[in-house]
Each structure stands twice: as structure tokens, then as C-alpha cells.
Length: 193
Image (cartoon, rainbow, N blue to C red; front, side, top):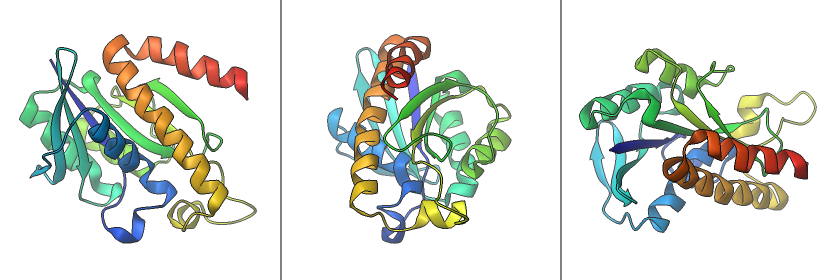
């Protein structure tokens, strides 16, 4: 069986160390952990194929901008014949506190433009999500400016912690299922908050 794990973010050095690229960061860590060394271009994304247990895992970094990343994910899903319920989208989430992660099955896009694009191109919101908490912008700061601004020390530490949790969550979903991940991670983190 094949899994498609797509990190949502923006390509290019300008966006590398921003909250909006949390999904890209998780994918980079997963590739390192799972021994994915050979990246190639396919379907408008940088991808690497790895193995986890008996499953093939395709890690993807769409090279379109976040707001249109759904087209790349849909092309990869078609190429690898991955059903929507075996697609995991990893993305930043301003509705979660910094340094937290949550697993989720399906649902709406919540105003997140990357998820809106996935919904439109996949024709369904039934894919799995790993939501990486980045917190809300302070005061009246525009959320778009907030997720794209350079990170201060504490914000970088919080994001780094969330990325490691997100990486562990993706592995747990593939090995044990999303329900188990929600019980293991979501419940444990809510108890710590």
C-alpha cells in the first residue's frame, strides 16, 4: 500500500524559516528519519519515495505556492493511485497554540488556502491532516503577514518542537492509524495544556 504525505508550504529561501512552511519542515525531517535521500521532480513537487514497515511512503513538497498546492497533490495521488483516505496533508494552523500538533480526519478547510486548494482539486475533504500549531497573530496583525514573517528565538523553538511532534505523528498514523494518533497525541497534548 502507498501513502502520500504532502507538506504544505511555499518554495524558495524567502519562506524557508516561516510558520507557513511548517509542513515542509515536517517532510524534511521525515525524509531524513526514513532514509529518503533521492529527491526528484514529479507532478509539480519535489518527492522522495521511502518505506515504513510494509508500506511505500511518498513524501511531497509541492513547488507551487501554498494557495494552489492542491493541483500538485492531486496529480501525485493519481500517479501513485493513492486513495484520498491515504493522503496526509501536513500544514500550519493558527487556531492551535504554538508547539502543539493535532491529527484530524476530514473536515472543512477552516479558511486555510492550502486546504481549500486540496479540497477543490481532490474533490473531497476526506484526507487526513497533521495540524502544526503556530498560534494566532498578536493584536491586529494580519494572519498572512504573521505566518510569513521571520521567526524570533522563542517562535523558532516552539515551531521546532511542533515539527518534531508532527513527524512522530505522521509515522504513528501510518503505523497505527489516525484514530490511534488522535488518542495518543491529541489527548496527551490537551492534558498538558
